[in-house]
Structure formats: C-alpha cells, structure tokens
Image 1 (cartoon, each protein chain N blue to C red):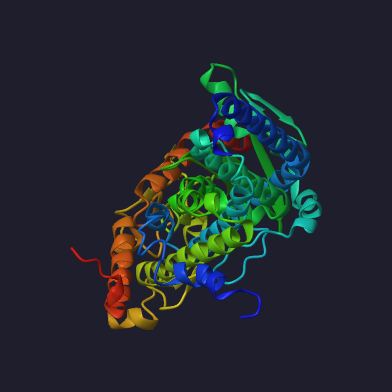
Image 2 (image 1 turned 45 degrees about the vertical axis):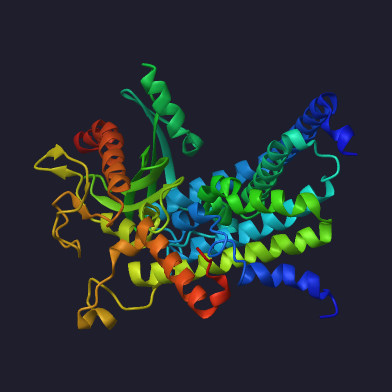
Length: 248
Length: 215
C-alpha cells in the first residue's frame, strides 16, 4: 500500500486530481451562491444608508437595522432623491447607491473623474444629505455613511470595517462611538475641517459639538485616525455641492 | 455510556482537561491571543473551529489511505482551506450578519495549528468515527479556554459581557465605577491574553500534579 502511494507518478496525479476536484467544487459553490450574496450586499447598503439618517430599530445600546423584508419599502419611502455628482455635473440616478466607492477611488487615482453618490432623505420634515465614505483602518478597509443637514452638520453616522481588532478598532461600529458624531460640525470658522477622532479632546461626554472632535476609543488609535482621515478626505469633495445649496 | 465505548469517550474528555490543546499542548495560542478581547468573538471562533475540525478530521480520515505521504501537509491545508471557504460562502448567502462577524477569523481558522496538528497526529491514523470524536473533543477543549479568556478580558477590560455593560457606566460613574473602580484597558491587549492563559495553566497544574513535567 505505502509503495503505491509513495511513487512520484501517483503523487503528481493525486495533486492534479485534488486541484481539479477542489477547484470545481469551489467554483460551483461560488457561482451558485453569487446572486444571493449580491442581494444581501445590496440590502445591507440600503440598511446602512437608512441607519445613518436615523431610520433604524435601535434598542438600548445596540445598533439594529431596519429588517430585511421591510428595507426596500422604507428605502423608497425615506430616500427621495439619489444624486451622482461628477465634477460640476449633478444628475439624478435611482441606482446611485450601487456605485462602488472603492472603484471610484481607484478611478480617481488613475486620473479619471470620479463619481460621488449623494442620497437625499426626508424624515419628519427634515432633509438629510447622506454621503458614503471609505478609507483605511489598521488591518483593512473601513467605510461608512454620514448623514448631514444642508449646513454640513452631522445628523447621524454609520461605520463598518472589514477586519479591525475585535474589542478595539472593531468598536467603531458600536453605538457609543457612532452616536458621538451626531450634531458635530464639519466646518470650523467657515472652513471645512472634518471631524477628528481625538485622544486629547477632554470632552468624553461630547458636549462641545463645535470642537470638530469626538472622543477616541482607547487602544484603537490607528483605526480612529483612519476614521478621521476618511471623513476629512472624502466629505471635502461634497463641499462644492453644499455651497450650491446655499446660493440657490 | 451506551453510545460511546470507554475508549471513544476518552477521546472527547481527554482534550477537555488533561490533554487540553491550549493549556497542555500549547497549540492554537496565536488565535487565542488575537480574538479573545471580546466574549462574542471567542464564542464565534470556538463554534467555527468545532465545525472545521470535526468535519476536517472525518474528511482526512476517509482519505488517509490514498493521500501520498510526500504531499500530505499540502493536502491537509487544502482540505481546511476548502472547508473554511465553503462555510464562509454559505454564511454569506444565508446568514449574512453572522458572516460579517466571522469575516476576520476565516484566515485565523486556516492557520490554527490545532487543526493541522489533529489531522497529522490523529486523523491520518484512525477511522472516521474516532477522528470525528477526537476533532470534537479538541475543538471543545480549545473553545472552553477561549471562552474563559474572553470572559475575563471583556469583563475586566471593557466592563461588558457580550457587549452588554454589567459593571455600570464608566463615564456616568454608576454601579461599581461609583466606588472608584476603573476598567483595565491593558486587558484588551494581546499580552494579557497570554497572562490569562498562563494563570489557567497554573491553576490546572496545581490541581493536577501529574501534569507537571519533570526536568
């Protein structure tokens, strides 16, 4: 027995056979589940956008999205307009939420003009402008959605991450961190400044909303810096659009 | 025990205590450090390893007579990787929320030395049923330590369990915090996982002198 399985020919044939079998199995699994997975991702985007503008089912201290079966309906009810901003062009597109921010960032790096999606939501007579953001954390990508009013004062935020450290950086998607952004100003003395996730703001209860700072998470310095950076670098592209809101 | 013979039952109970993969064999330490800052993450990891090790041991055991010995490690790696990817895809399609929690651990499961260790040491030389029991036993032994470490790290480091505050509010100074108690942020960092595992090893060996090696 051991003789047969020790020969070089057998080893090579076994390796080839295994690769073929495993490759076929995985390819089959991936392609047959692809549509379900894509649908889940689409629903998640709608849930994230609604979460940022305050349409959610939060309970106590936990963040809970609108349920899966209701999200399509709620999304068309609350999100009244979806815009795509490209240079000075602003066009409406009801598929704008499917725009992949990562792909757009790559396009910009290649020197092409980038598309910026912006979602306009109405709730209780208030208008929300929701923009997607994306950046780098400690280990991998972090992203989120920020809801603002016409003065670019944050009305709500949702953050998520691909692989930040559990218990530290991963806490950016917890209520205590995300809720701190509500009410924070992105402008300071008329100039765009962003919001800094700060370890030294000495305002743990976050009572000062115009200091452009929120309290950082201890032990998650680099993830926090990533959040500050993506807010600053991504939202600044929306400033010209908000200026047009003022003049019209 | 009608279902399991004495010998089979030992396969499950041994790794649970006297031959624990983490505290006695000191395997799987890397993932034990990385993910035990939170109780929830520890539980998710324990369950994932339970599945991968249980099924993986059976697959390897069924293939044990046809695997060429020269490339057996590579074959084992492929089996683990395939299982993990299948689990990940199925979760993404049918339990999307859970798959997001698991996302970061997928790589850690593949590199977990307990899995390769059990394939190599047990499944290659034993039948599928015994391999299955061995896999379950080791995964449970690993999971229990993970959950104990996760429990203490989250409780002492963040004052919460499964994300729910149990010691009061550190900012409003309610509950224990009213009396000057502070969370120990150091508990959330990897060195404290090592120290907690060390304490568990100490307790275990002081209760069972047979485990202390002669030097």
